Image 1 (cartoon, rainbow, N blue to C red):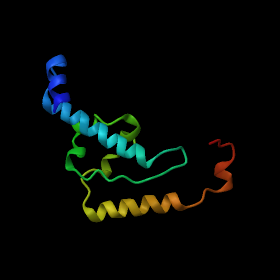
Image 2: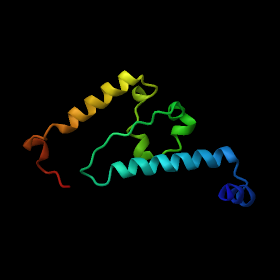
Image 3: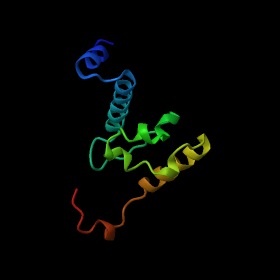
Length: 105
């Protein structure tokens, strides 16, 4: 609360803007904890419907936004489970030798 009051006094930042920024920062940190290196993969479900709103989603870093296609917004639980299953099945398949030639990690 003190941080909010300081930002309001010093920079005239509205409470809603501060809270949105803080929530997006925390969401970004959570995603960053799942993916720690170039070879990691993970799944993060942003279940709050506010992430479907452009004004909120645009506050996430681009390295996260690029992996949130419109088709994955406002999914039902069943659709989310199907998308997660498809992603994990795809990621669990070993790469062919041909696709790895010339690749450096």
